[in-house]
Amino acid sequence: MDPISSLSKEYIYSFVEGVAGTETVEVACVQTAEPTSGDWKPAGWANVTPAGADARILIGPGTTLALADGTYQMWVRVTGTTEQPVMYAGPVVIT
Image (cartoon, rainbow, N blue to C red; front, side, top):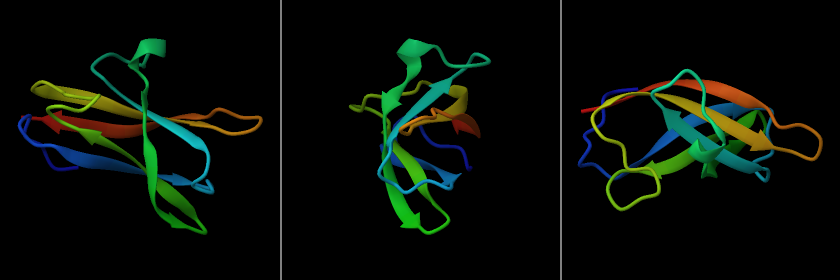
């Protein structure tokens, strides 16, 4: 993922394989090793296909996830009927 300006308001995405796109999805962007319970923010789905869907969240000023300059680790949590997988999605660089 290319660096994103801290002044920018835009969606960030992470493809999740095997989801229907109807499950509850949350995203956390943290500078620590793993997110804690308060780090999770409600997210949504986009680009749903038979193979899976993109988890997405709007970041930037005026959103629930306004990030200062730095490097963050993006995590995605999907809540299904019996499972709740947490997946590392990669770094997000804010400049």
